Image 1 (tube, rainbow, N blue to C red):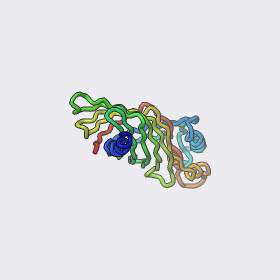
Image 2 (cartoon, rainbow, N blue to C red):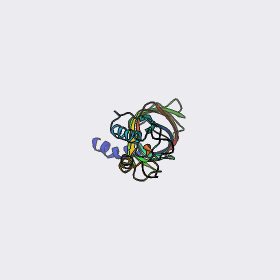
Image 3 (cartoon, rainbow, N blue to C red):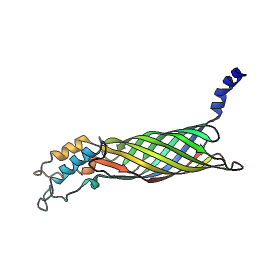
Image 4 (cartoon, helix red, strand yellow):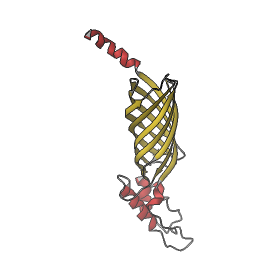
Length: 225
């Protein structure tokens, strides 16, 4: 009997594995400060380099309005494609996703891991509410600037409903996000900018942009195979 159960286990595990796919919208709004982990020191350098130009006469290539750290936030809307796999039984599951996101400023690629995935099928099984909690890790690349890259970490929870066992509608909240992008060459260019030339001062958010965010609401729709 024990041998039979062990032999049946792989088949049962395979039967409880389902391919999933989500298409989501994430309004990213990272705002920095000088004590933001990883990004913060670069934000301070970019602000200082940019503000050296403040106070020059109008018409000078160096003339500019001074800025603070808030000018170096990273605000964009990510469209996220998330193919994945869900393992487990009727009530307790585990979700692993691949993530590919695009926006007008960013490309993002990474993984989402949700060790907590709880489902409660309603009577008849037509609708199954569920809750998930976990996190994502993504590599970021600016699509409008060469040489600028970084990362994004998110702690996320979501509530959703599975309809007829095939269609998922999900509402998520980013409990905490930390990330940004950095370009050392652009920062060096700002620091060594020569006011006697005719070239405009590089935009500071092309050297570094990012920060922290909490309470980001995202929505997605998907299907299960």
